[in-house]
Each structure stands twice: as structure tokens, then as C-alpha cells.
Image (cartoon, rainbow, N blue to C red; front, side):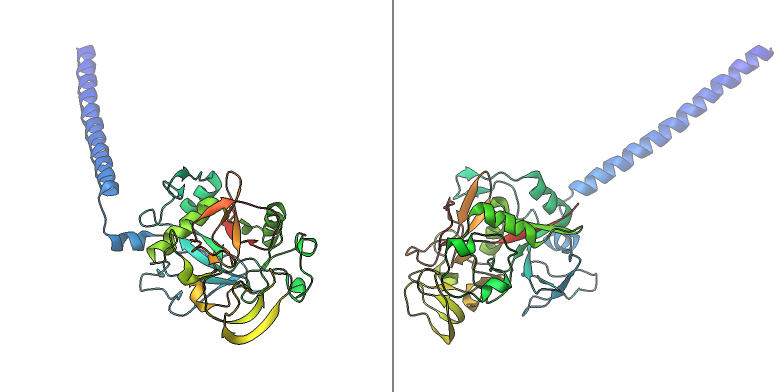
Amino acid sequence: MKKRTVIIYFGVAIIVFSIIFYYFFMIKQDNAIKQVTQINDQVTDNIKEKLYKNPYVPNGFKAIDVGENTWSKDDQGYVNWNKGLVIEDILNGNQFVWVPVNQNDVTYNNLKTWGTTEIILTDKDRNQINENGGFYIARYECGVPKEKNEQLENINRSTNDVAGIPVSQKGSRPWNYISFDNAQKNAMTMYNNEDIHSEIISEAFWNITMQWIRNAGYDVDKDSKSFGNYSNTYFSFSGLYSSDYGKSYSFKETGEKEDKNLILATGIVSSHMTNNIYDLAGNLKEFVNGKRAESYGGYYDNTSTGPANSNSGASGANDQQGFRVTLYHNE
């Protein structure tokens, strides 16, 4: 009798346990289904904007407001990150602009040169975007170090294809007559600390930047003369310029471009600014780092329209070739 009672109790216990297990299992399944549904639900563009990451500000930098592009936060703590937010190195004044990648209008999928050749996005570049929501690009073409900026004559490969720390500042003599190898080495010395490091802009980051300014209404693919320094463009400027292929520089107080071919100091023509970045089209071609060294953009004695997103094989150190850097947030 006792043995039969034990068996009955044991059977009842199994039934109760099974009911409880089934109940909790189904609830968990239901919750999982609801979570997946929520993730896959379409959201409005406004919600996407709010979910997007605010740009980080590296240690040693400050956020600065430029014109209508401000770091002011809304009631929910978000900034308008799509207008060209600027940061500045507190110690030396180098400036950089935030390029947002929102996977909607600006994305890293299907990057191609001139719409044909695929551009490889490295894991390093992809991680920067996924972790930070974008990246910082130098606001200006790289200028020579301050001590070299005072040398305005007898400029050539022997004076420029050397080691040094570049600057990203307005009014600097642009660093041409430099090889890709030395440009990359110098770019990497610009910043290298626990928080960030710097490199020549990658081919992928260049093309992502082109997407961004294209969306702002600039023609980067066919005719960029409205915001570039080319042989057949004319504009007002004030600052250092060279009319002899960058061998010497003079200062113009203010006035119109008259000579056909002039190399200009960095960022001295307001109309050459796109989303707060200067000289992406014209002045100097710029080295980019891809499968191999490449050059992008037009240059000062280019008689064509020299679209900003045009590319060519990188040449050696010469008067037409410069470079620009990006910042990487260390993981």
C-alpha cells in the first residue's frame, strides 16, 4: 500500500513539474518572439536619428561651434551630428570634422571607385564605424610643421620629403613634394596616445566622406569646380600662395585669383568648404591608403573639372600631391 502511494505521489509530481516547465518555456518563447519583432519593426527616420550615436570628443580636444554647426544638445541629449561638427586640439589648434555613417544615407556598403572597382573596407575601418557611428577627418589638407611654415623659398623634394609632424590648421603651407611612405609615417606621428591615433585617410573613408558631401548637394562625381581650386577656376582669397609650382610663396592681403595656376595655403577660400571641410576638391591631390597608394581629387593646375571623387595612381613626391589624415579611436 505504501509503495503504491509513493508511486502515485511521484507521478503527480512529474505531471506538476511538466506543467510548470511547459508554462515557463512558452512564456520565454513568446518573449523572444516579441523581442525579435521589435528589432525588425520599421522605425521612422526621426527615431533613427535619435538612436544614432553622438560623436565622441577625444581627450585633449574641445568641441567648437562653427557658424550654424553647433554642439548644442536637444532636450534628450542629442546633437545635430550631420552638419559638420568640429573639434579642436586644445594644445596646438589642429581641427577635425565628424563624418557620420548612419547606414541609411551614408553607408559603408558597396563602396566603388568611379562606380566600377570595389573598395575593400578593412576590419579596422568597419570597427571604427560600428563602435563610434562615424570618424573624424582633418578639416584641412596637411600643412607643414610650424617651424617649416616660415620657409617660403627654395622649396622642393629635399626640403619636404622628410620626417615631421603635420598640422590641420587654416593658413598653413600645404605639405606637397612628399612621398606616400613619408606622408603615412608623418601622419602616424600626428597622434598616437591611449585614446586615439592618426593615419592617412583610407580609400574607404574618403569615399564615405564623398557620400556625405554628395548628400549635402555638392557634385563630387562630375564637376567640382564650384568648390575647388583648379586651373580654370577663379575666386577671392587672402593668404599664402605660390605661382611657381610650390617652389616659393608670397602673401596676398586680399583680392582675386589672377594667375592661372596657384597653390593656396590651407583653408583660405570660404567657397572651398564643404560641410566644414576645406579643399577636398582641388588645390592638391591627396594620398589615400587602400589596396595600394592612390590619389584622389583634382589639383591646382588641372584644366579639367577634377571631381573630388576621381582617383588615379599615386605618383612620387611632386608639387601636385598632398595628404590628409583621419583619427582612429583606440579600442
